[in-house]
Length: 153
Image (tube, rainbow, N blue to C red; front, side):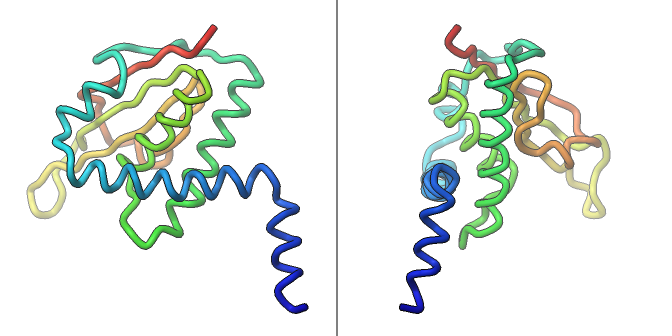
């Protein structure tokens, strides 16, 4: 059978396939929620406003967080809907919370206005000393709000 090789390859990916599939669906749910629900209601559930999570995490926690960041970044490129920085940060935040890992979600404004005279915005997520989402683009943005959640200890 021609398709059985693809199924075997998919099966061999194991946990990564399960994680990526779940992330893909969660990206869609988060995108829809951000479109429908006023942000003030979402912000109330993101964590402690203006809080800060610890700067260090254990090695296993950091590895799990990195895996989540990888899956969110990877799958956001394949969604038929927009999965930009805020969608990615909120999605990864939900997964970090699910796994009991501490996090800080940052919302920032650009330091300079764009060619149309508008400020740009960006969101990124940190777990320990690792930037999980939005790390490459965060330079040039100043944090104006942050939400922290503590992991299970």
